[in-house]
Length: 71
Image (cartoon, rainbow, N blue to C red; front, top):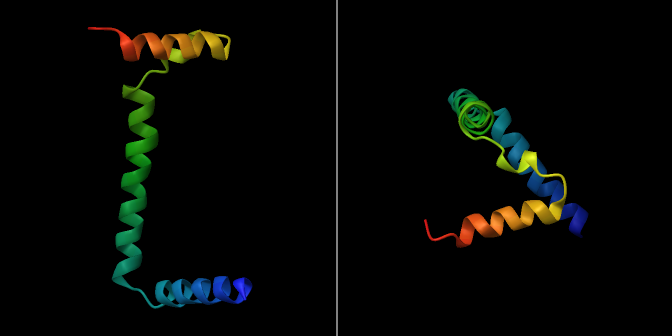
């Protein structure tokens, strides 16, 4: 029964995307924007401060200190 449900859901989306014309272009634009937001911006703007710590205990202490510091 569960396999049949999964197959029906898959076929629903497969047929829907197969019939799209404008929708494929819009999905491509959405995927490009997500790539830019999550990969490109992370490389240039968000530094990994936890990379300087060797153990998970040191990393967790740093996070706790950052979350609980008054400034």
